[in-house]
Amino acid sequence: MQNQQQSPIRCSSCGQTYAIPVHSILDIASTPQFKGLLLSGRLNSAPCPNCGTLNTVLTPLLYHDSEKELLIALMPMELNMNKDDQERLIGTMMNRLPKGNFKGYMFNPKRAITMQGMMNLILEADGITQEMMDEQRARIQLVQQCLEAGSEEALQKVVTDNDAKMDDRFFQAFSLVAQRALEDGQPQIAQQMLAIQTRVVELSTYGKQLLAKQAQQEQIIQEVANQLETYGEKISREDVLSLAIIYSEQDDHLQALVGMIRPAFDYEFFQMLTASIAKAPAQNREKLEKLRDRLNQLTAAIDQQNQRALQGVVGFLQTLVNHPQPEEMIADNLDAIDDTFMAVLSANIQQAEQANNTALSDRLKYIYNAVVTILRANMSPELQFINTILGAPSDEEAEKFIQKHALQLGDGLIEAFHAVEQMLVEQGNAALVGRVQTLRTMTEKVLNR
Image (cartoon, rainbow, N blue to C red; front, side, top):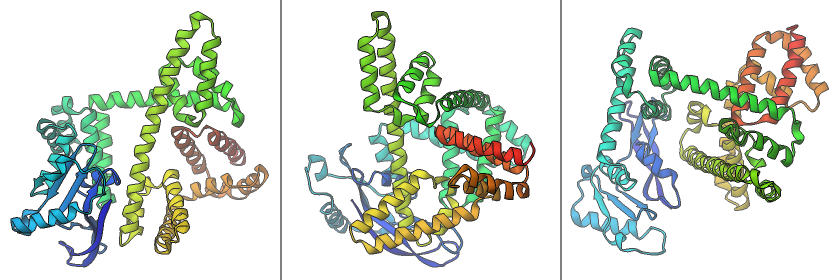
């Protein structure tokens, strides 16, 4: 549950007045995405539609996490509320929490007078100590040093002087800074940050190790994709089981296999594997049992990752629904528009229609049309070409289109094909990889390559 209203705000930069969706009650059990918004400093914030400056509405806030038995009331000191008014407001907000098991901790909510104070209480409940927070601040400061280096020589010196500190957590912090710039409506700045991050990866010891590991993983993924392609689209559970047994002692290959065809590892597959264990000779059973345990671990990890990704998609969609100009946010976050987002958007449209919620349905359809329009406008001619032939009703129709238009686009088409193939391999879409490769071969013949 979240209590939301539109609040007018005057832009601190250009002075334009616009409305921001403001949430005053956050119940994390029902809306977990709001925890991320709060901790990233984006709660009750929106960019100015005129100049893009991110502005935030300062408001009392009640945060409730029943799993952690945590209830926090934020009463910003800037509002100058006296104690009696604060207590009355806290009581009113608590009455709006979901009715259920009222536990002792709810009689005495923790207090915060600044947003940072509330964040610290939430992080402490998650087991994040003050020392961890100080370390993260130090990482952010090092990221800022890289961003402010100003020249290749200066950047190299920052990396050399701090090479031992540039580990996985440092690069996560770097990505977080760039992501916040993107979410704040500053895509060009975010791109510059990512370019500097790429250079730091190339210069640092840990970054070089990451690049080597990434190259190895890409090779393994390609090997598994090629193996799957030999089975075609009619791969059976028996085939999947045979491959899993082959890769049972090659964990990187096994991970790639599960990641690429996770739906194949369903209940019936595990029944088949269990039956195979029962029938196997005694000397082979331990190996198969270990394989079953590992496959259970890998599928559970993928499912958890997908669930977290889905929560992020839901939160992004809700932000778009409440945003005064969703087109700008869509254009600035095109990397977040994927098949999962479109599926969630379509499902929400259907649910709104079934509930006869015309206002929400119309808003969601508006966002859908805006997404499609912006995606098409940002698609290169080469990608438009590939998208068209992928949608062709037959190979014959695709070949006619290739013969008519391929020469106009030239060799850039082949580079686009390779980029699409790589993306599909990373997504685990082995069936479509084969289709794209077939169409690329047709195109190469027309281009006489």
